[in-house]
Length: 257
Ligand SMILES: NC(=O)c1ccc[n+]([C@@H]2O[C@H](COP(=O)([O-])OP(=O)(O)OC[C@H]3O[C@@H](n4cnc5c(N)ncnc54)[C@H](O)[C@@H]3O)[C@@H](O)[C@H]2O)c1
Image: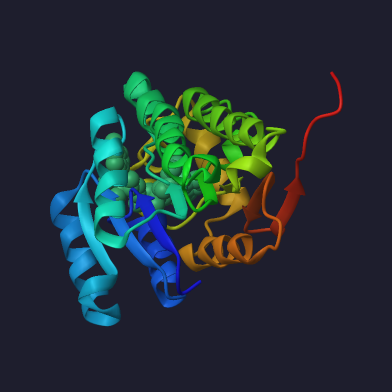
C-alpha cells in the first residue's frame, strides 16, 4: 500500500478520520477533505506529527459544491502526483434538512465518484484504483424513522453497484465497493437525528438503537481495511453490525430482471 494516494471526504472527525489513520498506518498519502476547517486542520496536524508532514494535508471541501470536489481531487494530484483510493464518506443525518441531506449524502457521493473516475481511469492515462463509498445499514433495509436518510443510502448502494456492474471496468482499472455499518460511536450518533429525538418516531429510534447497539469506530475501520485487502473488491457491499460482525455480499453483473 506504500504507493497509494487517497482522498477521504468528511475526514476531519469520526469514521473519515479513522479511515485516514488506517490509510496512513498502511503507508498511503492522504488528503483530508472536509467543510470543518478548524477540526480538519487539528486532525491533520496530529497526523503530520505522527506520520510525517509530507504524508497528509487538509483541503477545505464542501461535497455539495462541484467546484470544491474537483479542486480537492486536483489538489491531491498536485501534491502527491496521482489518486488511487477515493473514499466518499462525508454524510449528515437530519430529516429536517432533507434536501441538504440528499445533496451531501447522495449528490456528494455521486460527484466524488465521478471526479475520481475521471482521473483514475486507465484508458485515459490514470493509474486505476478503488472507490469506496460509505453507505449504511439504512441503505440495505427500510428505516421508517429516517426515510430520507435511508433513501440517500439506498441510493449510494445502488449507484456503487451500478458502477461495479459496468462491463467495461477492465479498461478503467477501477473497482467500486461500499460499506454499510449500523450505529457507530461518532458525533453523528451524539448529535444526529437518532439521539436527539428529531427522527419521526423518537421512541422507535431509541428502541432500535438499544436493540442493535452502538459499535466502536475501530470495528468499522477494521472492516474498511479488510475491504482494501480483498484481492477482488469490486462489487462488494460490506455490512458491518454489532451483532453479526462483517458480512460481505459480492455483486457482479446482474443476469436479468
Ligand atoms: N455513525 C454512524 O452510526 C453511521 C452509521 C452508518 C453510516 N454512517 C455514515 O458514515 C459517514 C461518516 O459519518 P460519521 O458517523 O463519522 O459522522 P460525523 O458527523 O462524525 O462525521 C461526518 C463528517 O462529514 C463532514 N461533512 C458533513 N457535511 C459535509 C460536506 N457538505 N462536505 C464535506 N464534509 C462534510 C463533517 O464535517 C464531519 O467531519 C456518513 O456518511 C454516515 O452517514 C455513520
